Picture (cartoon, one colour):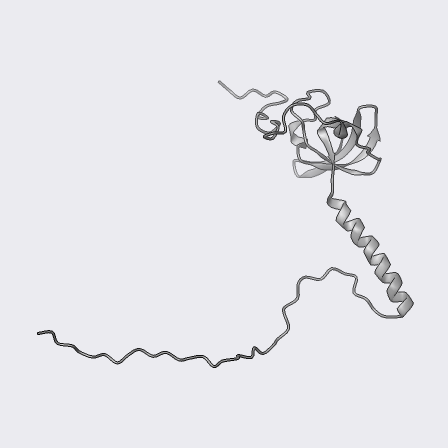
Length: 161
């Protein structure tokens, strides 16, 4: 029998829910507040068939461009034959979650602003760029006791009678 070419082809494990995460959907998932311009990830919930995006969008991140009563409009970049096309899809709230990738960046921006302000008041230079871990500075290790040198015993031929 040939492969069917259906909309949900090969999604048996892709859309299945995790162990101990089956059953009802918590209300906090539906009560989450989304804003236009926010980054969200598409994570399909197999229990709800309404408003389910195509499997090709599973795990992709995009920006919210529209908010409706029970769903979101999300712009997702999709690669089609070597070109990247911004696709606009409408997804129900159960199939999206907030993306935390930008939180660390925003936290760093606020911290840098604070450091820049303090440095300007003091009139000193402060390094705000992220730097890779530098090599450790050279140092001499002082030994409390000198090492004891070991040598093999000289070979002795023992004749048994």
